[in-house]
Image (tube, rainbow, N blue to C red):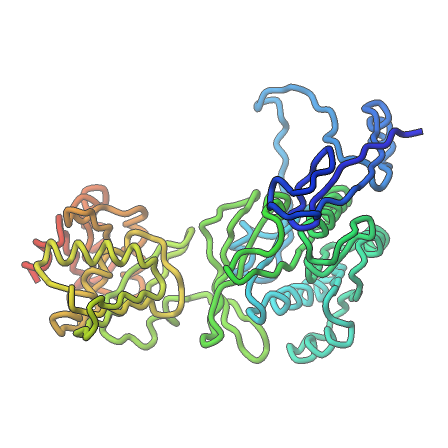
Length: 465
């Protein structure tokens, strides 16, 4: 008979302890520890169970014994990714869906999480693949209404269930090519004495779904809710357990949606996917620069580098005389601390007093920029607004600002410049130090009338203007 092992877990945060405690040492909750009993399997029994491919449900998950070997001895394996039929989603995932992977998709309510997964499921079902859509929040009738609204009428297998045991049994019986679970906060395990959505339930359910995905080699998408701070709801271990974490961003006032990768074991986390929300669902945006710049208003232009793509954006600034002792500093699209630093450089190096001036800054399109190459464009946009001048010549500014006013070089400068010229822009301001590492003549040869302005610091640049 297998030996029993007892642990105590916190129903609030999922922290485990070997003995009962009145207060959880992790989250500080009183009386939240519950008892759970597992079958303790010996290594020999576990080895036999693994060889037979049969592990008892509820047994402790122990990593199989492995050999010590060098990196060269590990055989190379080609991963055959499954394309989702959405170029933007495949870009963020690193080239497609990896078999046996567990992907967590988060975002605000109504942002489009279920919509994009329903559309992907429909496209794959039309290709003849078997897709299982498990709805733990909506009934089958509600899913049918959503599909009809999106114009979807494909052979997607729908299972409205939130019991984890039945979900796992269905996945193993149906053997689908893709599984979608909407959402991880709504399913529950009968072995855990807490409500669905609690940290202990999320941890237990995600762990068993992960084990099912790995053993059956089935890719699984989990839909996750977010809390009021914008973080994924549930214990932080949920993000550690899954292979990929992607998150939808956007505003209800805008049709654009941005899909970012927060964690990706199979690709880069620098990529961004851009979608447009319409009445018929989400559609890929193949040329985002065209959308962001379709209504230019005289702001400074900037070429952002997101993964392997270059996106042209407009930086708008508005400077107004303030009637308050503390002037306002409002920024949409960049961190406010970054704005304060650039304002200090502008005041110090350009001799402009902003102590009685409200500054409003906006990145058109609702995208959030972390690229430091935007510094020069922000500084010039603020300067132009203060002196009452607009960027009528559509000049593009690229450069990071140092605290001494120097314009520093940026990564992928040549790729940014080529994209600007490809879209028909003729004047580009670049750092003087960055110009040494690129061939200006080759850039100018890409088009006629191209003017490349190099600058060492912002003070000299303004004097030359």
